[in-house]
Length: 131
Length: 131
DNA sequence: CTCCGTGCAAATACTTTGCAAAGCG
DNA sequence: CGCTTTGCAAAGTATTTGCACGGAG
Image 1: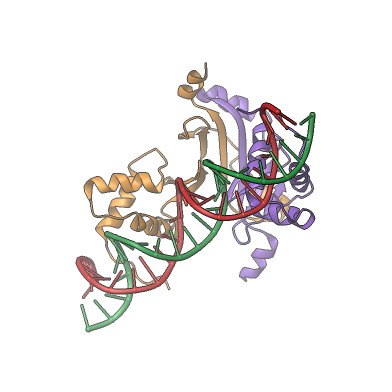
Image 2: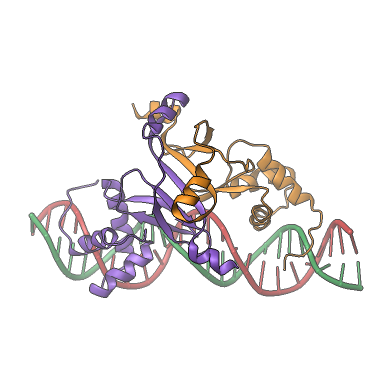
C-alpha cells in the first residue's frame, strides 16, 4: 500500500498546471489544459494524481463550488472570496489573528489542523451584471 | 416562476427536523428521520424542499463534507469545526471582528454577503482513536 | 377547478475504481 | 523483471428532474 513513487511525465504536467494558475481549478479544467500538451491523458489519471498530491500535501482542496472540487497549490493559510454569480475563486487579504487556530483549539478542546475562511458575494463583474 | 406556497405537512416536517437538531444534517439523514413519522415521503421531496428553504433564507448550506451537503437552520454568522475523522460538524466560539465582512468588502472592492469560517481537525473522540 | 406538492424512476454530474497494458528503475 | 502508473469504460454516489396523480385553496 502506498509504495514508492516513480517519475511520471503526466503527473508532473498535472502539478505544473495547478502551480501555474491562480484560478483554483477543477479536475476537469486541469484535464482539458494538460490535454493540450499530452492528448492521451485521461480524466481518471487527473483524479488519481490529485488524490496523491493532496496526500503528500502538495496541494489543498479549497472545497466544492457549484458541485465541483477546487484545488490550490498555495498550501499556506490564506483567505478566499467565492463569487456566487460566476463561481470564480479569488485570493484576498484579510488580517486575522495569526494565533487564532491555536486559541480556538485551546478554548474548545479540539485538535485543529487548519482553517478555511471564505467570503461569499458578487465579484465586480457580476455585481455590475445584476443592475 | 416560483408561485405562491401552499401548506404541506411534509414541508413542515422537514423544516422541523432541521430546526430540531444540532447535527448539521445531510439530505439523507433528514429523509430517514422524517420517514419515521411520514413513511411515504420521498428523497426527491426532501431535496426539493431544501432548495425552497435555502431560497427563502430559512436554512443555509454550510458546505460539502465527504461528498454530502450539510444544512443548518441557524442562519446567523457563526463558526464551525469539522472533524476530519468522523465528519461531525460542531458549532464553536471564535471571536472574530464583527465588522470583518464590511472591512474586507471595502479593502477588496467586492460585494460580500456572508462568510464561512471553518476549522478542520480531530474531535476529542477521533483524536483518542488515533493513539 | 386550478395550481402547487409529491412519489417514482430515470437522468445528470462528478468522482472512483477494476483490469489489462505500458513505463520506470 | 517487479512494482507503479495509466487508459478505458464501467460503477458508484449524490443530486436533479419529468411526468402523472393527489391535495390545498
